[in-house]
Structure formats: C-alpha cells, structure tokens
Amino acid sequence: MAADSETIRQLKLAETFFNHSVSCLVILDREYNFVRVNQAYADACRRDIAEFEGRNHFEFFPSDAQLIFDEVVRTKRPFITFLHAPLSLLINLSAELPIGTGLWYRC
Image (cartoon, rainbow, N blue to C red; front, side):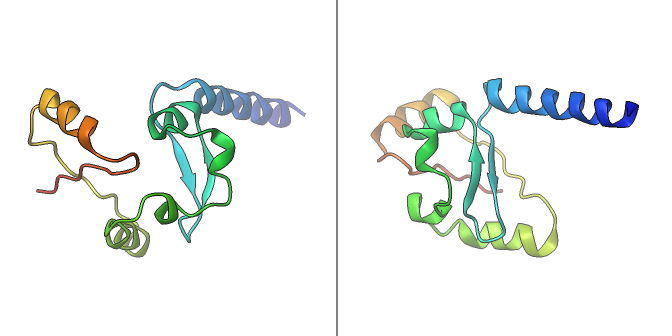
C-alpha cells in the first residue's frame, strides 16, 4: 500500500509540474502526433490545448525539422543547438514570422 500511495503522490506532482510550468512542454508519440501539451505550449502556439490532441506536429508546423526528429528517435540521442543571435533580435524576427514558424539555429 505504501508504494501505491507514493506512486500516486509522484504522479500528482508530475501532473502539477506539467500543468503549471511556464516552460513549453509537449508529449509526442513515435509518429509525431500530439499526445499532450501544456498551457504554456498552447499559448506560445496561439492555439487551444484541445486543438493538439491526435494531430500531427508537422501538420501544424510543416518544416524540414522532421529530419532532426527522425534522427533523435533513431539514435535516442538529444538534438542540441545553440543560440547565436541576440535574444532581442530573435524576438523582433519572430514577430514577423507566421504563426507556427520556428527559428532553428544549428552549430
């Protein structure tokens, strides 16, 4: 019984973190369909949370980034990138981009 209550406590803690994080969090399945997003992610995408469930990431955000996603899944290694432009420049640039367009920087 103690293990069950500890598991429930940990699940509630993870749920609270996911729901209230100011960081954008998203869970995708192996085909890059949205399983779940948090409010910060939905807000950043200017969409309602309900719009994501069961939809494909690349349906919403078409790009060649699928090659990067495929490599991460294949190798099980994270993709790490570094920001080379000042944040103020990125903020100004992002205001000019259509919704769903990302800025990718690769070393």
